[in-house]
Amino acid sequence: MVGYYEILPHARPIEIRVEEQAWQFDDQYCVQRGCDCQSAGLTFIPVMGEGSQRNADPRLRLSFRYSYNDGQADHVTAGADAPSVSEMLGELRKAQPDLKGFLARRHSVY
Ligand SMILES: [Zn+2]
Image 1 (cartoon, rainbow, N blue to C red):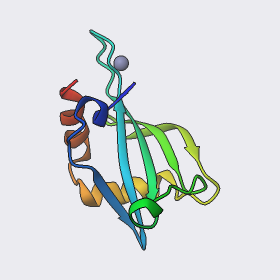
Image 2: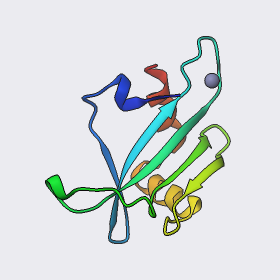
Image 3: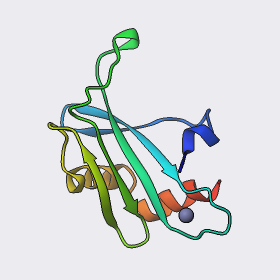
Image 4: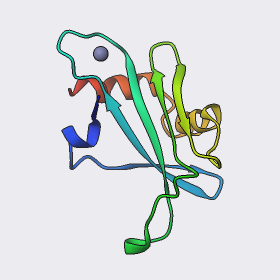
């Protein structure tokens, strides 16, 4: 799996907001030649503070594998205070209503 921002380091970062908390969205995809898997590794990193005070509380961090074709999530790694996968996916869909197309387009640049 290779991160989208490793491939396109100047791409605009995406922030998702759940109630008062902002999250930075990080996505990774498979780079195996000829592989047609349709899943993304999604990581949500909490954005705390400003400038040099910015840090990511590991208790809030959430990552999982998301199959964008059928909407299934697995391989969940969640900090003790992290929101649930369905809660985070719900917010992500508010920001990107066509989530499947959005992730498929990002995967297609690989
Ligand atoms: Zn693959």
